[in-house]
Image: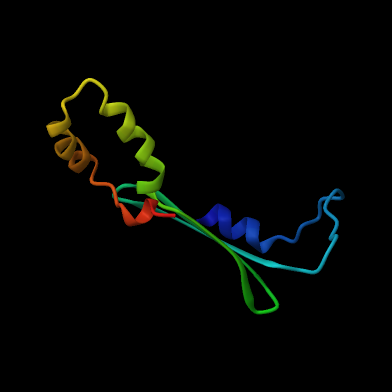
Length: 93
């Protein structure tokens, strides 16, 4: 957090950085949750929300579940699924 505070306190002085449009506000939040990293990015303009991107740990881990299923019996799937304890709502897009 100290590194982030230092970076945010400094102005952008890179000669290659030039504004090419109206200023926009972007906020990024990252947290380690029980199922993995959860990231939320929001972008606002003129006081309104323009974009929202949310990627939960469960959403990122669903592909790993598919690799554990081959070679197992269908009745084993609930046990495999609950071993990961992934959130269904997080993957519903």
